[in-house]
Length: 412
Picture 1 (cartoon, rainbow, N blue to C red):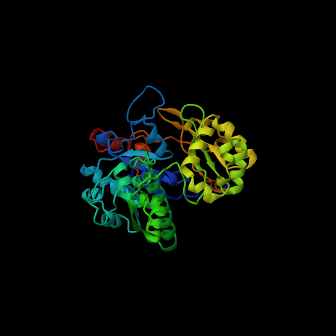
Picture 2 (tube, one colour; picture 1 turned 90 degrees about the vertical axis):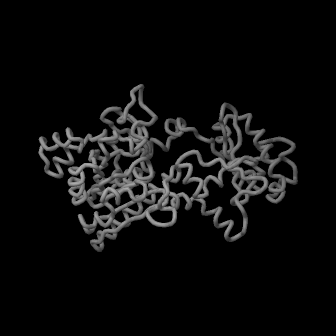
Picture 3 (cartoon, rainbow, N blue to C red; picture 1 turned 30 degrees about the vertical axis):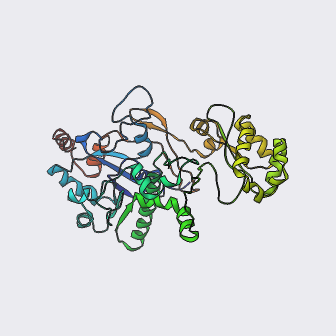
């Protein structure tokens, strides 16, 4: 294995929660030195995940949030109060030694602090600046602030998720934050490549709402090209896949509490095989032998398949259907996915990191491996200001006495 791919890159990182922190996390895993900057005055209140669950034990506090740890592995953590004069004097020194400045404050916050893109360029002309907020730094919605459910609604995600006859359900988790993180990482890497070729920096303006909208592409295309609305009088069923046309093709109940199995009959041959396994008179109905016939009777068919699957253990039925060539998979819960699936261990998808206060904790890995410059995740997220001495002393050359004085003054 060779060296770490991004070992020469340094990121001055103001980003938090997931949309921002998740982007710099990817760069850190591939070797970039990411310096996470937080305000000592608010004990991590900007990032609500600092003290948020899950927890490893009964302890609570701003250094003990499991989600924060997951999204900030391999980063250095420093504190800096930009509302103080000394803090505003120190920040340009961090910028000057960095390749990238990243943040996901609300639009305009960095400008009000005196460090918008124009000011950052004055400090370091070739700086790459990533701003990641709900509606971007430009456009008609720029002044508005947002949060997960709002982004889901505005982007169209909420509209696409529901059960038949029920109102829109939303997606239940911040997929737009994940999308924003991925786009942010890609944008920084593209800008770094451009900088490597030309020496030029640039401003990367990312809107989480637009990132979320890219996940609705199929519905948008179906409407613009075919004039079909996503939601009709009968609603939509997020557990039933209509593209491409297959039947049965969905999620069905299995034996046990909240147990389910996914089954997809790709063609008439798959259905004939499944019907043989079902061994019931209704499954042998000639009207179901063709896709056209199954689609015409889809509601009744889905209900009948669900009544049949409900009698079986999901994993046992998965094995049975796999053996005869019908695509099927048990719906895995988190504990099953992390502890029982063989691919987890083989791919190192849940590495264990060492956190200063929490100890050994498993976190998300990255689902790609590089033969020469693979990622490495070993160090947990930084405690608040944990690396002040390493960064301010080791990188900026400040004395221990100066660091202690600035800490006492609330600058660090």
